[in-house]
Image (cartoon, rainbow, N blue to C red; front, side, top):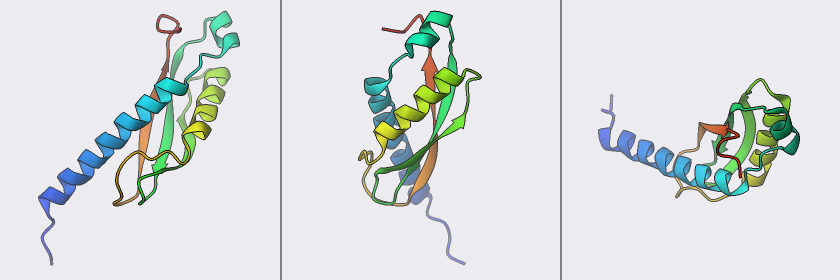
Length: 109
């Protein structure tokens, strides 16, 4: 049996880190605190499940884990739609990554 290449695992981990950094940067650029959620004081963290294609682009995005607040979850799903097609990393294997999206009134602009 071929021995697994430890460098290949490290390279994959680096690709995921690079993709995560690019996705977080794009999320922060596009994220809007829903007005109604702000009024009601809703805060929380949602998780966006992002599929990265072998070409290194964001494919599908789905709500991986809700925050318990419908408004924040819906805002995260809309955010996911804005990311589709974004180039995040050079080509390789496709993968999925769970990205936390935090809604905190303290950080809201």
